[in-house]
Length: 279
DNA sequence: CATCAACCCTGAGAGC
DNA sequence: TGCTCTCAGGGTTGAT
Image (cartoon, rainbow, N blue to C red; front, side, top):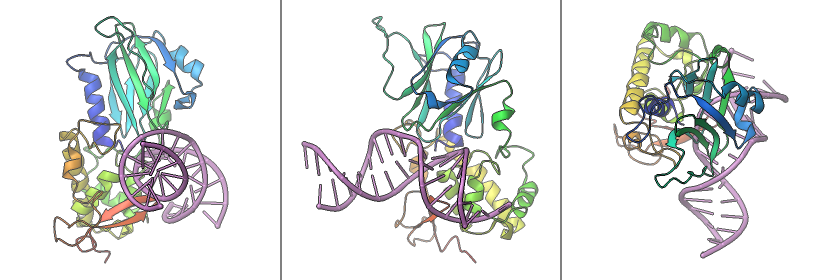
């Protein structure tokens, strides 16, 4: 994580601003500072700065787990990966001193207002792009979980067309965009499906239940402003509503038997062997 | 096509 | 208190 609900929360805040800070819309980028070159995925750092300086941000939206900022010319795209945040803050404190760049701040966009947008990333896994066409980054992504065209019939056929462990498939962004480990574990539990089931063995009813569980758990995450299980993102409440994630050995909220933890696709996987039978 | 290991990184938490 | 060790996480890459 951050997964879809956390990114959605961040985007919403960037769009509307806060009591202390404005939103990003119509902010003009005056200068760009990069403190860790590898954060810039495309193009090279100098071209990235050159393309952005003087450019105006025309909005903010989310695609999968990506942050998308359309500009007057071209597009700025970011991915927080493990431990990132994107925030807007005043350049100067109230007593007129320059607010220092923090230890983990990797890319700083100085606006020609008195604010700046900061891409912070503890583990340096996050990435940013400047591209003419957003499809060069988004092109391989699967559908959005809330896409109205993604109905249970379409989802069933998507599952039928592959023969993969359902947990790994759901986390594959080219299959479906936005799910990470937390919400995948929760959605599988809530639909009673074992993480190791092969995707093409799910029945139509199971596919329907799974899609609805995915949408419900993501909605719940968005409504609670995301999960704050780590030090990089605070303010969310979904961590209090986990039914299985990070609860190995605890009682299943459904049947009371202990929740089990396994590794599936190199990821910690939490489930109830009784409520999610392998069949 | 599916699976898996390694890699990129840092801080938290456990064990000593 | 402070050291060392393991682990977590999203996504890419390369091997099988």
